[in-house]
Image 1 (cartoon, rainbow, N blue to C red):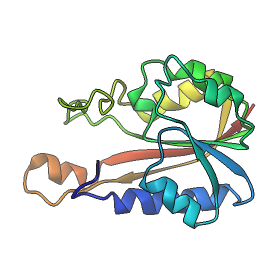
Image 2: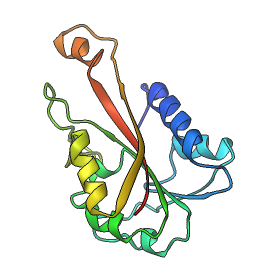
Image 3: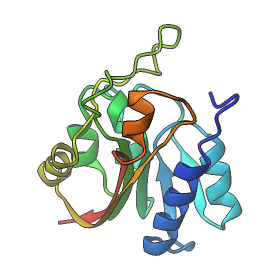
Image 4: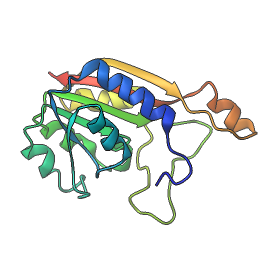
Length: 173
């Protein structure tokens, strides 16, 4: 997936945010298959289990059946049609989740070759906050950052100062 564009800035900010809120002695269920960031978390001493690639819109039993202290979801919810039920039924007490923000100057992402690599939602921060609130979570901390690209044009210029990513730490109400 990241052949020539490893997301170093996103991983750096995500890891710093995770360290700030989650102890390495807390178990983590990370939504999505094992990935490069899973490896980074494990190298940092986190106990991480991933879901197995199931369609989390229709089968979120891994979330219901886990006894993990923390649920993490890094750029996952934008791929789901209905993340409310998964979030509502999680037994984990803590959540760290990030999403790409909707950009008014760019359409929603859609891979033409990989049906799993498409965004159904591109949230604004308030929409994601509302989803979490409805699902029984209370946001304790959040952060946004930009994602500039090394290209010339209006959109690359706008990406220099328009936040692209949003991450939250939330606890069960």
